Image (tube, rainbow, N blue to C red; front, side, top):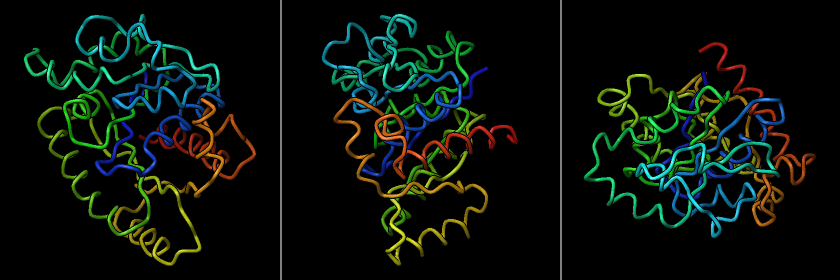
Length: 256
């Protein structure tokens, strides 16, 4: 049975999509079967996996509305070695159209259940807001991976996200838990980064992943080539960090 994880943070620009795409590719490199679900109408994870969002015949939008299933909508990422349930701008309309649907919070969960046996991991890239799309991701998942920068505003947003996860756990998905916090875009030269990192370790203990993702130009360049950073430049510090993170995820799951 697949382990299903959301990559979520209500704050934008914290490396959610970079983390989702590179974790998917890092897990694929260690022979894990991975499905990446793009739940963001911007479709950045779709493009970052080398799939043209303008040429999709069906996407996660159709899947959520019951017009297609995952098997027909998914695409293979040739550059990453994993499958993608892609997204494009049509997904923005799903928020309104899902309001009148039955069981609207669990549409994604029901869709993933049909293919769960085909994968070791399902990773869900959530949009940077607590919306019906994010709620579908949280209801489908076993756990949440929270990427965050080590800066003051990130701590403010983290408390909001933790409260949201608690509410979803209590009312909609009793399986949901925080898997861990991943420090991303980390610059060890900044005193603030080191201070916030130490605060996270103090407050969250072993919930903080040991792997730290450094600020890395090659990771930022990779999406423009339609490739995950771990395949674009495997020797870069950022790629090596995500491969290590994939291995740490596999080990952490064994103890869950």
